[in-house]
Image (cartoon, rainbow, N blue to C red):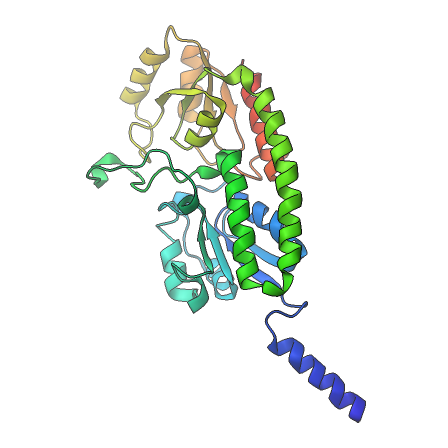
Length: 302
């Protein structure tokens, strides 16, 4: 009986203690890239719920029951921010978010808040301008230097939430950063031939990638952000690209490729289906794979 009581008491301590070795930090990641980074830094100390996959346009997600269930368990909400998830994340937070994952708490991590954003709008913004992000372009993950910055922030945040495993998070971070910095040197050397190359994009989601590689956007298939291509706009784009050496028309997995194929047929510019995020194709199955595959595909258009 005494042994049984000791065992029960011990189990009670384990259940009551959120920092127990058996308790994992539940991370609600809005996008696949942040789920992948959370896995790198959190390892087996975290459970990760990815709200979206590479085939989904994050602008147009619904706050469905499975996401509400994931949010209820969350100890950390890890998203891009800069209004990318404005159509659904506030609903999830209001209906299912606990007090520790509300905005401005330790459990609220918006990656765009920690890097220098591109395309920040300082003038008046209204709906006639399309689906714009006044705070700046939210697709920061396509610059590996930003990923490195956010890895540091994530490790600090996990340490605040789960102090007992501080050493493990810091070790995971150090291993990731050492490997990542080595990879960036390789990628930048391999991408030198892309500098100065011109591309057409469907949507202005590639700004950070193209700035990092020194490439130039000469046209977007959307007449305004978030507005589907029109026949008249595509004719204008065709006139603009004629006579120029354009490397590729970039299309993400969730974007309709019809307009890109039309322009390619008229201009001879190849359509390049880039992964955009982790899981965007079979080879982009990790953050490393995402950048290696993206650079490979871009260089294939030269």
